[in-house]
Amino acid sequence: MKQLLTSALLILFTSYTFPQSPDIWITHFEKSRFLSTPCYTESIEYFQKLAEYSPFAELKTFGISPQGRELKYLIVSGDGAFNPDNGKETKKPIVLIINGIHSGEIEGKDASMLLLREILISKEKEYLLDSLSLIVVPIFNVDGHERKSKYNRINQNGPEEMGWRTTAQNLNLNRDWLKAEAPEMQAMISLFNEWLPDFIIDSHTTDGADYQYTITYSVEKNKLKFIAKCESNFNVGVWKEPYAGLYQFDEVTWTKYRNLMEKDPNINLRFGARESIETAAFVVSIGNERIWPTCSATY
Ligand SMILES: [Zn+2]
Image (cartoon, rainbow, N blue to C red; front, side, top):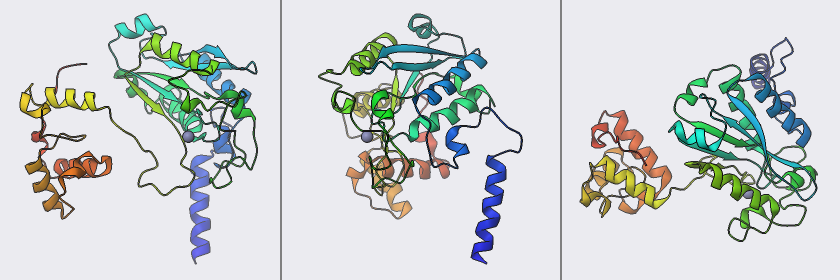
């Protein structure tokens, strides 16, 4: 019975994900049934194709790797603002997605292809461009990406073959932001300085480690303080304590809602992403979102 159910689910899933008619927008990752990732050339071709098809995207080069591969990024703007000057004029936040800084951890690249297809081709997520511009780096450590093996990360659950952690010069780009020895990093810092993105997603894979979420993240404290300031209509008490955490709970409010949820009311948990999100979700679910007045200021 269990086997039958599994087969039925597989057929359903397969027919949903792989339509009968050939579709040039189905990615290598999907065609391989989520087991493998395309090489550098094939990956860049997909991004090129998106740029050729859509008036809202342009593929640019921001550097060259030690082995001579081009470092590429796709700029996606609903306003056709493809350079930093007119990008800033749109006043929309710029989100930079960096994939493959550790190129053995490459799921972000494959996920970016799907996201971009839904924005630019199927247009299911085209609305995102109403409120932001996107810069997507398909692969940052391009030389490492091509140093493929089944054994580069043996405790990681896929893809079948993955790239290497460091660059052709054996530099770990994720340890090079400050010293900037690698030409790839120098190029990235120039790209960053040109565009000054408001938000960065740096995608990694966690080796099958058992995290609560598949994505881990942190928040810049000054930005939290700003949100606290404007959310409170610039009430000094708010950003000078005792408010804290992602959603700026004060100690009393936090304790109240945590007790209602029958969860640990420890006030230090306000700084935990998981706890603060689940508590904020609870507050919203019971219709008490008025505890956060609308923030109209910009930063
Ligand atoms: Zn990593």
